[in-house]
Image (tube, rainbow, N blue to C red; front, side):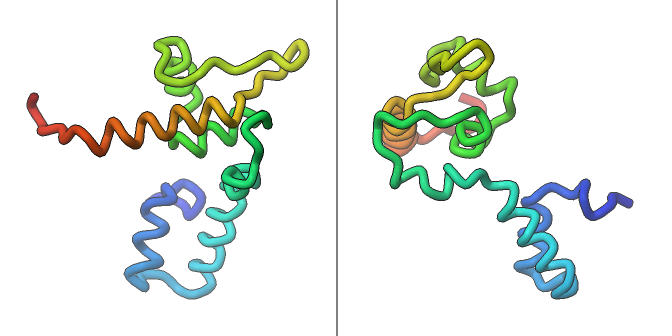
Length: 116
């Protein structure tokens, strides 16, 4: 049996929706979920286009792993980050918004059928 911390967030949300766990555990899951979302993601729409965000925010916006993020940057699917010093990389908010909009419009226009 998995411990409470090892369950994925999706399982936690499904369990909360199904009233399958106690209210004490529900509040623990909700607290865990709310603290795992970077503050910048919650206020992303309020940021100016010239602002920059770090990797945890980009990971949350695109719901991907760090490996996928860097693979998508290398392939050109996502914009490359800017270097802000020796060890700090940050993405431009305006470029991320443009990328999110292009992904959203391309997903709406095409329907993928499994096996094609």
